Structures are given as C-alpha cells and as structure tokens.
Image (tube, rainbow, N blue to C red; front, side, top):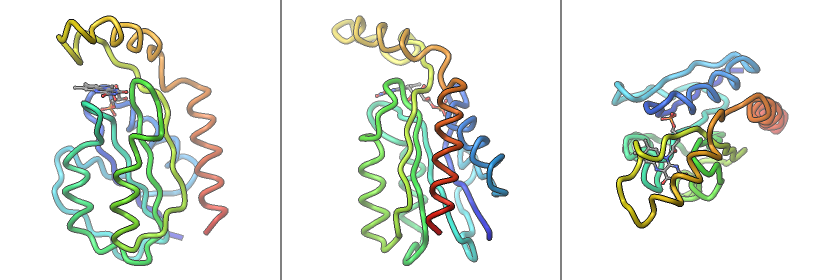
Length: 159
Ligand SMILES: Cc1cc2nc3c(=O)[nH]c(=O)nc-3n(C[C@H](O)[C@H](O)[C@H](O)COP(=O)(O)O)c2cc1C
C-alpha cells in the first residue's frame, strides 16, 4: 500500500514530529507544504492532512492546497497539534474533505508547545495564553507519540 502525508508545520515542528511518528509506523511519503504549492496525490491508498493551529485555524496554505485536489473516493485522515490539543480545530478541514468526496478514516489531535509571548500581545487574553502555554510545554511528549502510533495503526486497519 502507498501512503502520503501532507502537512504544514513551521513554528516548532510539533506537527512534523507527529507526522514522523506516523511515518515510522507505516512506510509513507512526507511532504511539508511550507515551501511547496503543488502535490501529486495519484495512486495513494491513504492520504493524511496535518497542520499546526495558528490563531484558531489550521494553516490557510493547507486549505488552499486541498481546494485544488481531486479527492473523490480517496481515503484520508486529519491531524493537528495546538496549544490546547483539541480535535475541534480539525472540523472545518474534515467538512471540506467530505464535501470533496473523500472518505474520512481518522481524526487526531494533540498538544504542541507554544510560548505565550510569541503568540499574542493581547493583554486581555495574556493570562489565559500564559496558562495554556505553560500546560503545553514538553508536548508532543512520549504519551502523545504513543497515542499517535496507536491512531495510525487503527487507521490502517480500517483500509
Ligand atoms: C501565531 C500562533 C498562533 C497560535 N494560535 C493558537 C490557537 O489559536 N490555539 C491553540 O490552541 N494554539 C495556538 N498556537 C499554538 C500552536 O498551535 C502549537 O504550537 C502548534 O503545535 C504549532 O505547530 P507547528 O510547530 O507544527 O507549527 C499558536 C501558535 C502560533 C505561533
């Protein structure tokens, strides 16, 4: 089987670390779209789409790329890393993938570390960000990597 993972990761490479865990489990091609605009997705059995979360959203670059792809009947999964590590950040991308006829095989999220001062200078949210930033330190950690490993095994079992 042929696997491809397309991801955007540029802040602390947190999302890239998760992509590498997936790649260690299944022999997959990895493409960080930070410096890439077009990707050939022909002949893959499974395609993963991942991103860090930046100001409440996955990377606009990922959305732009997905918009261009023909994903009808393609098996796909979605993953993200964010300060709070919640799956709801993936919702919009999942909706778009579904609307393009892709088959969603999985949805993964975990925390990725960030430094509050680097993310916001808004005083109102400053304290909240400072707390969230503290809680995110060290992530993704070994527990996150273990979850990522289990996740990708489950996804491949579904194929
Ligand atoms: C400019 C910026 C904005 C961010 N906004 C959010 C956010 O809205 N919610 C959140 O949970 N984390 C937020 N974060 C934290 C990142 O999602 C987290 O560090 C993520 O793991 C970054 O992924 P990367 O290292 O793969 O680029 C933000 C980080 C940056 C740099």
